[in-house]
Image (cartoon, rainbow, N blue to C red; front, side, top):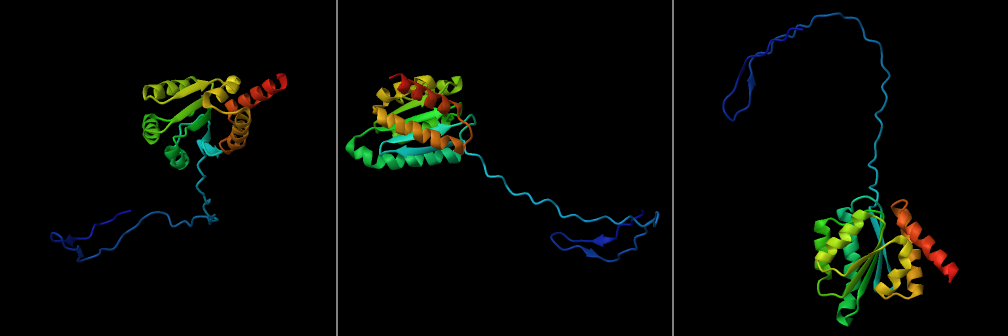
Length: 207
């Protein structure tokens, strides 16, 4: 195929004027191409993002949060902070403590998220228990300690020890475990919740 470019003239900051448009000469076989059936392109819909963390309030002073193995997203962490802030509003004037119980297989807040929640809880009475078997999550518990956040880690098999640490009754701990078991399917299987519930049930049978 031979293509001759047209002669053009232009001025700075002006439109291009084509004075002459030469013919285009094309060479090659004129054999007709076989007909092709046109198929519509597949329609792709955005897949909703999987939650990295879910949470719920138990009573007026306890937040239960459940995390999987993925890093916690900005959106999910912001939602948790809003829940904590709502609970704190009536607790601060009464000088009552907010309690946070976290179950995680590995997902944990990054440095920015840790600083954010510490700032939110500054001046409030708070206590956090983290139920996990993950070394990574336990290291994050240690990092929170450097920020003077009252937080303690517990193995899932030792979930009964959470009650005295957070100041929960046995009934409140049962409610918290039930809530965690109901929340977990929203993010998939959360092993530490399953182990904690089984350990609690086994302990209840032995008593």
